[in-house]
Amino acid sequence: MTRIGGTWQNWGRSAQVKPVRVERPRTPEGVQRAVRAAVAHTLPIKAVGAGHSFTDIAVAPGVLLELDDLQGLVSADASTGRATFLAGTRLHRIPRLLAPHGLAMENLGDIDRQSISGAISTGTHGTGARFGGLATQVVGLTLVTATGEFLRIDEQHDPEMLPAAALGLGALGIIVEVTLQCVPAFVLQAVDEPAPLDEVLETLDERVAASDHFEFYWFPHTEVALTKRQTRMPESTRREPLPTVGRWIDETLLSNGLYRAVCATGRIVPAITPPFSRLAVRVTGDRRYTDLSHRVLTQSRTVRFREMEYALPAENVVPAFRAVQALIAERGWRIEFPIEVRFAAADDRWLSTAHGRASGYIAVHRYWRADPTAYFDAVEQIMREYDGRPHWGKLHTLTAEELRGGYPRFDDFLALRDRLDPDRLFSNRYLERVLGS
Image (cartoon, rainbow, N blue to C red):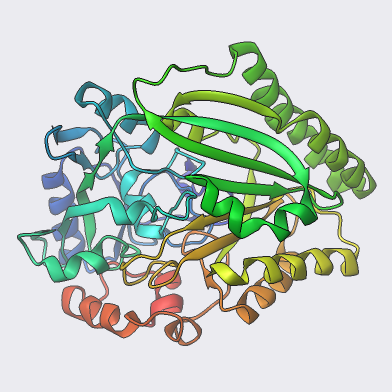
């Protein structure tokens, strides 16, 4: 997230706005005062975290609340595994805050720059067929509502709201605190290795079931899948992390530095993309290591991109993936970013992309200076044909009417929104499109 000359823009440079006013609350009470002032001046108000959503879900044309100063651990209880954080706390700070209590988050996505409130509100997820998205770890939260009051939602207070509020798109209020159900700290044994793509697709169910966390990447124009599988182990397990120099060469020099140059050049000379992709799968993605969970689950990504991701019933992943393969070949596109495939357990969050069904995710990307429209539109059509649900924080074109049929509790969520924010204090154009006015 950056602001230039009063204009806010997200990390992917796919959304921007010049708000009427910017406020930077340091406490939940500061958020409360900001909401009450917005009501008094009849201005809409939105909170933004790290700006890592590619959609304009956080765009705030009225009052923009920057939560950079609303960070930190409020409380932690090692006996219950519960930990409460201020809403703006960045995911990459959480492991250090939990470490003294012997705790860790159960699962993480592969990027940890987001704020905890932004991550849960947009449906951020990691991979692992037995693990839900980040919102499934939420056991309580506190909102500032459209009346300027605090609303606590947990097992003792309005528990029926939790499946809606834990993944609420920012439509129900401004989150100021989040309570997570954590787990004892653990390490992961990781194996990253290339494998023939056809072989991976043919044995995908077995591979997903055999690992705690499994995913793969496919660079278009190659016949190789870069697989990643991880096994959860007790914290006492001996750690064998990646060598510092080797990790720097792989992740900083090759995966970010050289890759950035190739992406930029590929816009001018598309023909270099296929040979570079074939080189990339030969020189990266083959390593074994054991380290603390957050060091294995997350990775540094500094090459700016734009992304669309759809959640599919797990059984539809392979045919949908093969359809995307065929699409790229038929159109003759030179796609510089790999396609990522991950998995998640079914859950009960009303607007979760994995609500009620074991899910697989197919994510497509383009370099941020490339126009993704034709590629994303065509992939989106395939995803819809296979009963896909779009990630709320990643680019898609669907409207409320198109989304309603995919979510059994969609109208229940709208009813709760009508109850908590009847005047649409927290709305913007994105929420009007995906939820209705």
